[in-house]
Structures are given as C-alpha cells and as structure tokens.
Amino acid sequence: MASRLHHRPWRDPRLLIGVLLVLGSTILGARLVAAADDTVRYWALDRAVAPGDSVRAADLVAVRVHLSSKVSANYVRADEEFPEPLDALQWGERGTAGSLVERASLLPKSKLGRSQLPLSVVAGASPADLARGDLVDVWVGPGPGDEPEDKAVRVLEAVRIVETGDESASLGGSLAQTVLVDVADTQLEGSVIGTVASGHVTLVRVS
Image 1 (cartoon, rainbow, N blue to C red):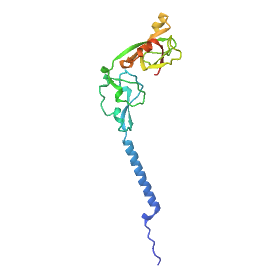
Image 2: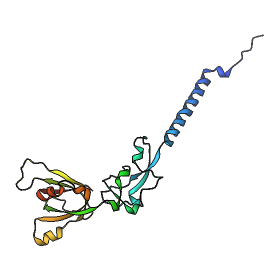
Image 3: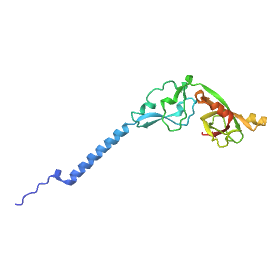
C-alpha cells in the first residue's frame, strides 16, 4: 500500500509570500495613517494683506500642515485663541495668500501708530488707473541735480493708497499729483521722508 503524502499548507511558499505581503501592507497603511494624524490645523491667509489692515475673519482659512517643534510656536494654531479680539488687531507686515499666520504679524491697534504720507508723483510715474485702496511699492530715483548713476531704491513696501489727488492735479493744471499713502510710524524711521521729498517718486502697484 502506497504511503500517503501529508500536505502541510503552512510550508507552502506561496502562502508564506501572501502572508508577508498582507503584513507589509498593514504596516505601511498604519504608518501612512500615523503620518496623516501628525498634521495640525493652523491659520493661513486667504488673501493678501498689508501692514495696517484690520484683521478680519475673512482673511483667514484653516489648513492642515506638519511643522517641526522648532518653528511651530511661531505660527497660530486654529484651535487656540488670538491674543486680542480680531477687531482689535491689525496686520503688522505684508502677507500673501496661502502663507501661514505668524504670531509676530498680529499687532494690537493701540500699539501701532499710523500716518498719512504725502508723495509728489509726476505724470507717468504711477499706474494710470491708480485708485484708493491699491497697494503700492514706493521707489525713489535720482532727482534734479542728483548724480545720474544713482540707482532707484525701494523705500516703502506694500503701502495702501488713501487718496490719489488726480482730480486736484487736473484742475490746477499741474504735472504732478499728491498721493497720500497709509504707513506705520515704524516705516518712517531713518531717511524715508527726506528721500521721498528730494527724489523722483515712482509707484509700482503690487495688488
């Protein structure tokens, strides 16, 4: 009588390979889930903002990101309170849509003085359709009597137009208009006022 062969399924290589594949997929899936759970909701900007703009709920959108422990404290989490009510805060620096909200960019309105700086802008040195509320960079180049090789410098970045003055310039027949821009007092430190008063001002719209 022929000996009966006994089949031991756990010794089948195909079965072992299948078990290993299942285990590998399970481990990989667990790691992916753990990595996804490692993200935290932070506030990001939903639109561009300029220094001095009031902080509004419409400016903010919650996004999930993973930040290292070294930098996470610099940004505002969506599950924590702001240092002040939103209507008591203003942006202290320029921000672009999609960027995370830094704690240092949120300033109490009571602690940041603001001024309206008049700029004498000749025809053709600003956008033709410049309007109240536009954001502009202020560049100053060589003025009358300056050395021609002097380069233009940007003295103010992303300041908001308060008044264009184009109507009064047209009525007076002037080739220049007085444009008012809203600036933080901290932006007027140094030689900014003297530079804009003595040089050729050019306004470049940024938003």
